[in-house]
Image 1 (cartoon, rainbow, N blue to C red):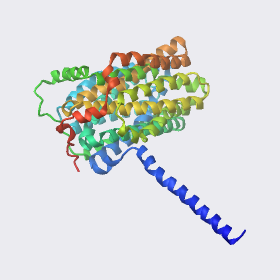
Image 2 (cartoon, rainbow, N blue to C red):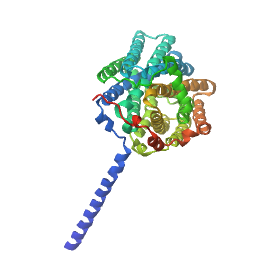
Image 3 (cartoon, rainbow, N blue to C red):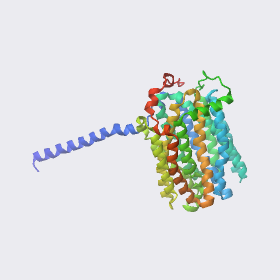
Image 4 (spheres, helix red, strand yellow):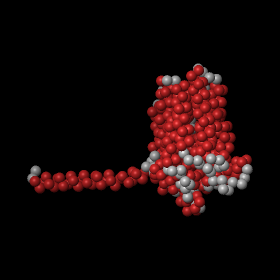
Length: 455
């Protein structure tokens, strides 16, 4: 090879290398645009503290979410009685959520959040004591589950109402995505760890860890600034405020559509109550398998939530939700046909990603369409839907499993979810047409100005 040939080859290699590097550099902005914006974490100290405490507490709560249905199944060997946990939890969720939302629009939201944490801490402590002493009566487990659900019904709308004031409207969608991603990350890690803790150390340790994480959340709540609601226009009584929130929800088709489509997806397409039976009787995977099923559903949601940078530019949020729910129902129906734990987990990964996109869009619709003076009450309705739907789903899947079999229940639920989308769209055209860009253009100045973050 001559010197000129060597020089030419080296030059071509440098050009190729430069072209590759340029391609990587050109791709970086596109990759960054896909990731969720974390600016709110840097801008607001209170938001960082609340999110950090919530993440640690969420990990502990997920251990209990695995331990309680597993304990009921061990005591009863009945998927129906595991499913009835959902009904037991739904009643306090529905009633306490409305009351908690109305209170969140009237009193310091930080104080209300603290009360809810203390209530849930006490129920986890009682579960730990019961597990340590032996096999408690199932009725006691139901009672403690109901009390914990009541605390959660106050916690969720209160925490949701606090976030917009901490981050401002400009960061709201990214904050919702980040919060949901962190929550789903707890659902990935928590159940997997919970299954291993239960298998290696016992149920009592799972509940005890939950107690410790609740203590961390209590400290976090005490560390943030007071969060008074906007009470400048409050002229109605407390009981009138309960009904006025429901009237506002009914008057907004985009809100009602988002509520109904989520109830559809969670009631018919959420088979969590069947995870113990599937793991023990179909996949032969034991307690660890139960945790892996929970974790798989959330793993897809984590990846999707932390990759929602593209959603900051999306406008037709209602249509995005519809597509996401169709993917969710299809994934669940296919999962019901699986004979392998790994195939079932793959289906749950896809379904979880779709659910994550749906949840971020629906939360954004809620917060964007609701003034601050109603955020507590609207968040309480959202809580009733988001937390109540899966519990109704527990009952539905348990009853269907008792009648037709475990796997048939999963398949039928997923298909019902897919079929039910069209009637929801027809009933709520404002939801299908919802355009986030138009909402921003029509927003009042008071709704665009963020409240102090407490820094």
